Length: 168
Image (cartoon, rainbow, N blue to C red; front, top):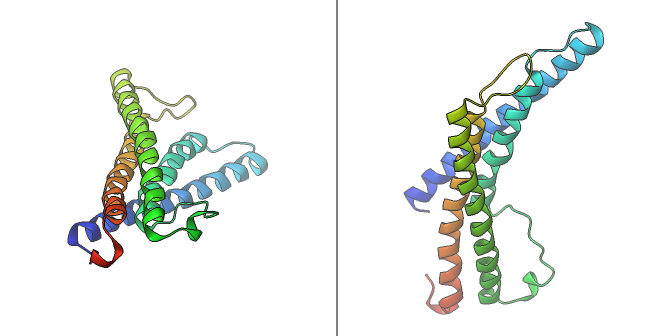
């Protein structure tokens, strides 16, 4: 494993762990909100807004790490019955589709981030939280995933075009 790949995997793992911590915080906020609403007659101010923002971190924080580990879901009905070069071809197809999809998503996230920043967009409710950090997290997660997809695509293309015996 190269130093750059190792550093990238550590970065994505760190973001995943931050997302896990966000899940824990959301759980605590939700529990406190339910207890406050049901037993004290008062909801926890800002619990909904913080939980909504944390969900973006949880989802987009884990995408790049799952890609580095090869943990995304794959339908292997035909895949496992094919040779390594055909499997690599399937991988190329999936990676290109993912690059297009997440490239478009990152492009739109950038636009949304700039718009949110420009108009000082914030959540509605008792506690008004700015929404640009959430948009930035979405953009960062999509960008990290795109970077990993490009690295994986290079490996898959090499596997398609090089015969198995000439590969290191």
